[in-house]
Image (tube, rainbow, N blue to C red; front, side):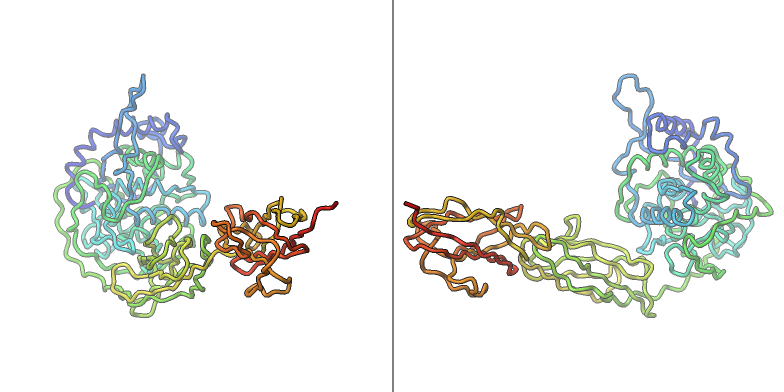
Length: 562
């Protein structure tokens, strides 16, 4: 970690016991996973044997702040338990995404390890305050490098330079680097290219989180087992206080978290300043690795293993020489349609297609992990899944990203879905979406009763029909009812009968066509009363739905038998 450790280390001297109590209390309370997470002061945790070799961080100092505490208002309660405060439980969105992606990647390549993303979050909290509260760009890279103190043996491990200053800017001694605080020699062994940008960058949270997860899983560890979990954490930093602190945050995050905007995360006491200097350019040319493509082997021990105390502040380190900044990546210059199908849906239904775009840079290559915003524009009540009008998502490894599913409202017509790159000024891509009226492709009577009436009377039985669309209930579908003269009358231009059965309008006048009828929530429509005039015989009633479905019903008018 960078300078300004004194305050937090002084605090740490008094918090070890609190951490032990907090974690023990969590275990007793039945928190998720409490069976394998034990306080650092326990007998089993104290006996855990750390793996051989120098720890990931070189035993650099770390944040000793503990999760927030509250006192439960219950009789007989004498312990303070961590509470999921709305602030401390928030993890910056990109950082949280990196932890979850690392968990999924390792679950696919090493399912026996059972590394939970909350453990990575706990280590990230203790090591860097979640990358300084999430101060990362859209690709997950910190705006300035996070550097630990010079590991020159004064208060910390003595590790001579192993990377010629490529990662840490120090050609004399090593320094821990990045949000997960890898010393260069360990990073060279375990570094990953999790965001597929062709670089293994310890200052990128996606790369660092995956590398940390693979290191924790080394030697066939199963982190669902308490002994393996303790050894894995101690392999990160040889300190019982460190173990207790990480476990307390691990249990805290398992009790509930939520994402917050990047750059707004809660910073621990004595935060690292943002003036650590420009990002050094790695001298080695790392070979891009595919997440999940190999099984790591333990990092070799350096000739001088770390002997740091992990709990004493060091003198102010000598500022490293200013490294040469890396060449800027090729800028994003283009946003294009990635083959979106026609966007059309019936009112009240989901769109089957989703607007999909591809981001490219000046070299014509696709850009992964680029933030793209989707926005619904126009006079419409359509919404994205979750009831949102706009969302921001990140492109995948192939540089493409699809908007969430669109849900059509009741307003018909067209509207626009606009896609735009967040940050660089790149021309937007607009998609036209169309909402059509609710329709039915079938309509039928709900019963088979013969409908009869005597001249000058009303039909005793009501006409009831049900409409469907592709076999499903068609609710809210418009239906027109017309008395026609012949069954072969065209559905679009029926000839209205001027005699026989009829309806009455609101004023009691005779009408033989009804519009503005709609099926109910069950797709059912019950017609108003039908009356017979003096004409006798068999007459026809035709019902036509929006969508063109029809049903023709016979109405018989006959004098009653003598």
